[in-house]
Length: 380
Image (cartoon, rainbow, N blue to C red; front, top):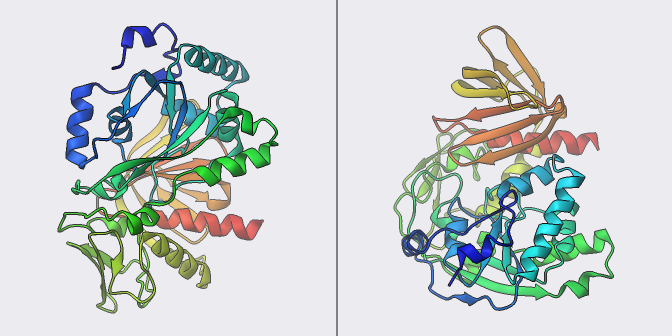
């Protein structure tokens, strides 16, 4: 049983947050079909968990018996963005030490954003260094099947069989002789596998007749004829307007009726390779969308513009048609592109501005992510 008053004697609410209450976590676990196994917390650990759905923290809150807290997502995001000061970092490490001395465990989600295709993201040195500097013994928790219940691209919840695994652990002392590169390699090796990998072993039994709904917001290439922006979802199928073929999402997360792809992992790789192989005409837009809700923020998060715009995606740039004038954002000047639920994309620019696009009509913004990878790969 958690003792909130006791935990608050040791925690720093600047960096940490309490788990969800018992009723909320039990109801969410019931909705997800989450198995009832528990972990009894006796000794304090740093638990490292993959990011699969917006409900991850609520599900994890149902796993443990004992005292623990979550590291806030904002802390992880600020470390990724280089916004976490040395003073804040020192204060955070002191806070970890206090929690450990109070026998209070900590759960962290080391990825910056929710997984898109179900793959676990690469953990950078800054985060693997934090795991080491926390001075905790470490255990890795894998959320299994939860991605298929509520993937970032889907609008509706799908009932699945879900579970967690406590697979790997290591004592802090075993990391002390590693250099930063070795430490980072070790942490990434222990991180949970992709949703597809787990679905091959543990069938999630997705119970829905709309398994492919909204998938065209990520998939821009037909797996049969390789035409672009021709696919659309219908119930469990992704169909092509050009060649008339269809692929089907099965109840175990695999993809049927295709010779080229078998699952979402291979779909991601397939369309990236197809995009990388085509000739680009940089004078012609690849796709255009109108009435896209757009927000442009300055470095201080002040809103520079908010409203609806039309956008044109070229092979090397994005053109946004603001009411006053058209603005060109070259992909070489984009530092990163991130995706969020509800078909939202964050585009971070070198001039410290952030452009946010909200798609409400199944727009495919994901192609910008792959174009950005290709442009920067060619630059390197």
